[in-house]
Length: 359
Image 1 (spheres, rainbow, N blue to C red):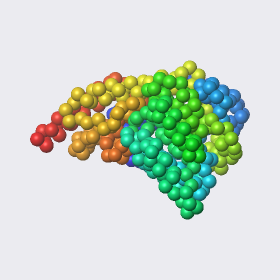
Image 2: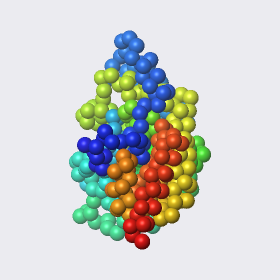
Image 3: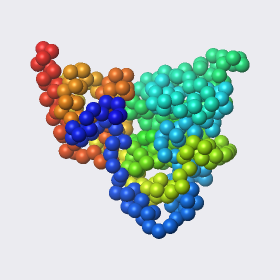
Image 4: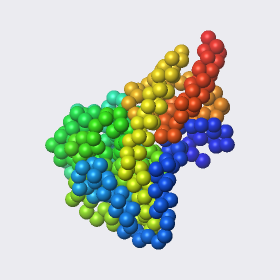
């Protein structure tokens, strides 16, 4: 059983994670098409080729594209390809590669060290990055090699184009490669209303781990190497790590459905809009404090423990181990106005009860 899910039979609707949502219709229909007849295996199929070409068209560059089953595999293998075991990766202290990958980046890189950097609202402090790189240059210190950025961040904020360019310029000036954990890249893109290239390779990103499972896919993430030289023998890493599927079409075909007519951005924009509406409704409730700027598809609240427990007793699920102790409410492509109204009503009720008991 996952953390903080409790008894699944009691779940009415959910705001714990966008992972909870099902497969969006566009991905589902393309998966059904891919199920017809016999198809070449191990990625030598038309669906995988179409998905790769769509990603190249969307990002407007001839990048190398690979698919992995999970975000953990995508991030860990990508970082391993950028480092030697004696190197280090700099990331925000709340970054997923530090807090939620169970040591996978270190494992697949044979020991590359993760160095944590502070920063407000989930965004990495570039002055701290430079200090971390320059604090030691002797052979006894793990040599900094990669700057890892999360877009959108673990706290639901979004790096602007200018912020990413500044990070990319600094990283390359310091001899660092730039990795982006883009589990919610589509949400950031929908928020900023820019082109994919502007917040990826044009901003200095060398490799992007592009999320799909949180945006309507059944499974699978894409790893895009904008610096093609860094993808050397990455296919061998994928095979060794169990990420080369014999029936790869069932990972790549849903990507075709998600990408070919823009469903990935519609899904992300819908999730963002739901979070915006949820935040606006919650701010009208006495006792609610929003912890971080809402810029993507999550809302973080500071809730009294008793109120959080009362909400869970009513069947709601949300995480409190992310975001400095706050309660995270995440919207997805499948969130509805009715879901939001029901949560807001129960939030209003439990906070009113809390006010009576504490007053």
